[in-house]
Image (cartoon, rainbow, N blue to C red; front, side, top):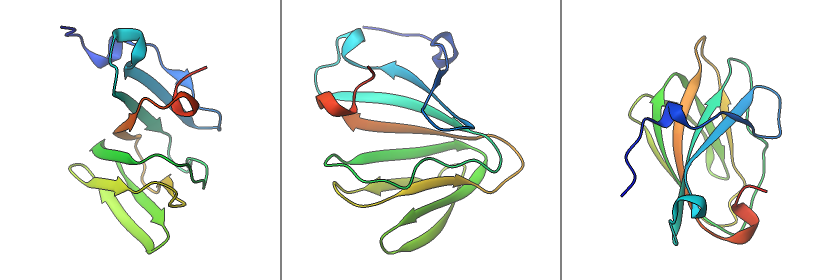
Length: 115
């Protein structure tokens, strides 16, 4: 069993300005099926508008913003949950004044894991 504060895991560049990620649980910790990441999106920043063949489960911890999907744009804030199906184009945007922080769980498929 692994128990720790997520802030013990270093923030890493997520490949786009204003977006950082912590891989808090992954294959490195022995998780064979799912990886858990915590994203920090700075005010005015956004994740890439992209798609991939795996799903996301998201839980918003702090801040406010919007998620863009194929069915439209939806507001998100503390307590919001989001399911992004495989292959759906999506993006998370911070429209607030504070960091948008969310947990994102994905399957441990090789293309999704940190390099």
